[in-house]
Structure formats: structure tokens, C-alpha cells
Length: 174
Length: 155
Image (cartoon, rainbow over all chains, first blue to last red; front, top):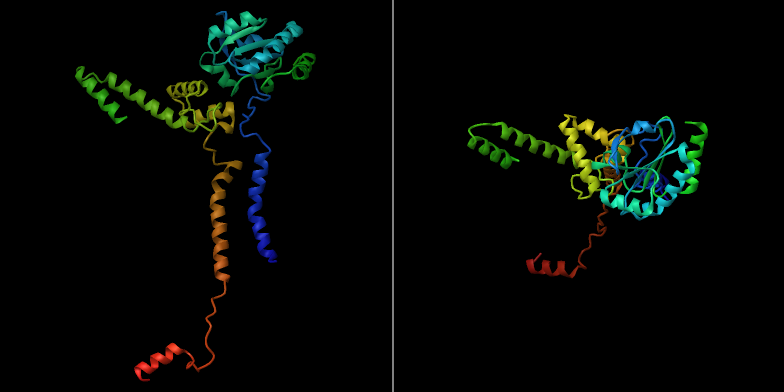
């Protein structure tokens, strides 16, 4: 066997294998978490009740920002968990829902039917969603009391995730 | 665009040479053209590798609206690309920047071509010349065709 030629072929092909191996280990559709440990984008939106809401009022407590829509089946599955989490954590955590690409009336009707005990915002033009880098729903962000984004969840939140992410922030006050 | 420009100018002339409407029309068209060119470079987050300028999804349309707003705020192309990159990362840019790891995308095809060409050239150069078999004997009278030819020409 011509070892010199074999070595040359291996040398030429190995970079391709390294690149492919690195690529197969990642999800090409996953949007990078650009806000990790960055200040949360400031926003001023209107609640579904028509009141102006300024995100600066969220500082001082950990916050869960949840982007959702009535047409999104996983969001419907998540709704009950978020409502019970908001009741459980009470005044120690802010829960904020942001309606994503939906009809305002559909969201209002949905919440009237299935219940709601936290602030729900209307994001006209998806400006807040774009600022958060949202690429689909449900998508949630956990922000500490200083307004720094600590965690992003693409998909449905679960009870263990909420506990694991929120409780250190509540205990640490940050 | 030329058609719109001509149309806008003719409308303006018909209105007593007042060029203000034409200017507005041309500016809107120019903004649209730039928005489409830039929109082709930004990936729609809810589509399969489709730029926001070509996607009918609401997400892409909202991003195009933001892009147009940034153009109207006189942001440069680089600033607009950076705006989306800051929110969605390099992932959102359909034309990877020519720096860092992305350089591989631009350099590898050329390098592969060079290496392939070099290997091809070396293999050609090293190939031994084809050996032409030569008869070692002068005795060619056994060949019936040659004999017939010689008989005919009287050799």
C-alpha cells in the first residue's frame, strides 16, 4: 500500500469530517441564545385590557416572560402550569405573558375561558418578540431581579425547569 | 423602478412642475429596493432557510417592517445586519461574515480545488509513458497483407 498517498488522502478529507462531526452535533434550526447574561430588552406595550405597561416596573423581582398564542397547541398545554406557578410564587416573582402573532380578541376570549392571573401584553408588530430573538412559541425567558436574562426555553416549560431556574433567583435576590 | 420614477415624474409635471410628489415616490421606491436587498440576507426564523424578503409568514413581515423602519432612521446596511445579528445571532444571516470560523466557508472550496488540481497534476506527471511494443525481428514476411502488397507493387 502506498502510505504516502493514503496519508495525503486522510489529510485532505479529515477537515471535512471534523466540520461534519461538529455540524451533526448541533441543531441547525436552534436559534442562538443571544441574551444570555445580557440585560433584558426594555419594552413598553399595552396590556390586553388596554393599559400601558413599562418593562422597567419588573425590576426588583425575578420575572418569567412567556411568548404564546392561542393557535399554538403546546402553549395551551403550558397555560395551566404557568397559571399555577404564578399563584404559587405570588408576589415573589413577576409573570408576564406576551401574545405572539395572534388576534387580540382570540387571546382575550381564550383567557376569559381558561383563566388568567398575571399580566398579558399585546405585542403589535412583534417588536418585543424580535428584541428577545423569539423564533416561535411557546418561548420563555427567565430574568433576574436586576433585569439580566438568565434562561431561555424554546418549547413548553415544565415544573422542574421553573423550580430549578426561579428558586436560586428568589433565594439569591438576584 | 424606472417605470415608477417615470410615472412619478409625469404625475409631478402634470401637476404644474411640482416635484415634491415625485421625490416622495422615488424615495419610497428606493427604500423598498434597499429593504428587499437587505431582507434577502436575513433568515426568516420560522421558515426553512428562507429570507425575510421572500417569506409570507407574519414573523418575516414583521421583521421586514422593522428593517424598513431602520432604513427610514438612516441606519447603514452594516448597522441593520448587526441589529438582527444581535437578536438572532449569526444564525439569522444568510450570507455568513467573512471572518473567524466562517472563513472556512469561503476558503475551503478554493483550497479543495487547489489540492485536487495538485493531486491530479502529480498523478499525471508520475504516470509512466505508454510503452510502444516494437518488433525485434526484421522478418516481416509472415504478414500475409504485407506480402500481398509487395506482390502487387512488384517489390
